[in-house]
Image (tube, rainbow, N blue to C red):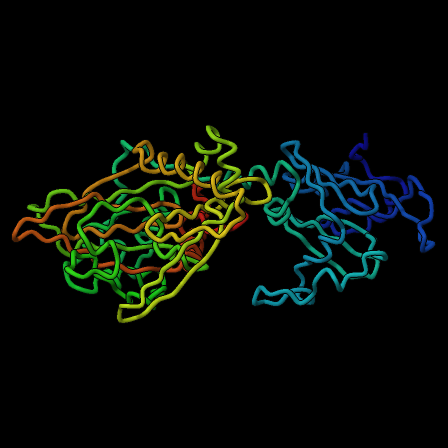
Length: 461
């Protein structure tokens, strides 16, 4: 086992003495082993590593205890908590944060294809403050903060921690409805109310904005507090969910709506959906809103029915909207599996929308396994075990991430003068998540519970 040296090798004692006290050299060229020549005639070199010195002023940052550079292709960092992070030299050189390699806009100037991997080597490593500095053999210098190194570690423990932080927890069915006051969310002099509302959506999948003005178009004003309106081609910037004699959408009726994603036939369906109870008379019986967390359903499906789960990850469903007898004639169709996994076999998206499905276009032998899996998944979604439901009050606006939280509605029966009239709109999930994460840097920087989370948009993170 390689050890992390705790003293300065004799060969570099003079170099340490000549360094400023704010800069602690932790590596100089000090031969400990010479390995066979490579095909190109270059010898691989190994160096000893130094984590600190006898001079307390030269000690390395408290987070980083040591650096092992005894491998030709990567270095290993040892952290205060005992964990270790390996970084390939090519990776570090590629992501050098200096102004020559990256632009102030955040875009990259240099990429890995422009780095000569065969010749890449380290000349010197030293720590200054909380920054690990590398002088490459071409004399280029790179500086990485310990914060950056920890946040971008790709060792197993770091990837596991990142996945854990991204995971979501469904809201308990008996928990109160998350909510924020309209005036607080719309206060442009203080974005904290907006941040709180978005955090509720990211954490729980939905929130209710209380006391939204009962005026037409208020839902658009509310949505634009977060991001521009999206997906307006078919239904406009604002759509009215109210029973109609000749509806262009099943939502514009009084019937029971199964849990679903809107516009599932888009390559990228809407992210946040807003439904404002413009009018919801007490005389209307039924009409409660329902929400089902797809992550919770998918994980139970995997646990109880692994073969059906595999089918839903493999066989593509068909989502379609063919409606020519409407003002904006529509022919849209998209095929994809109901469940999408990332490279770690974690669920990152669920596409479930029974009202907007079309006939399968899959091989013969996949049809019946698909229907068998469909029946089980449908029972889990509609069975009520994962369904959170409540009745909106006039002035309530529910904001929900419809990619993560399926929505539906119970059947309702209006009396002669009773009306259930909602107005809705959409915001792109990427825009909304960007808004949340920017606000999180302001209001949640010191809050360890303020996390970025999966939003069921297929992001592999």
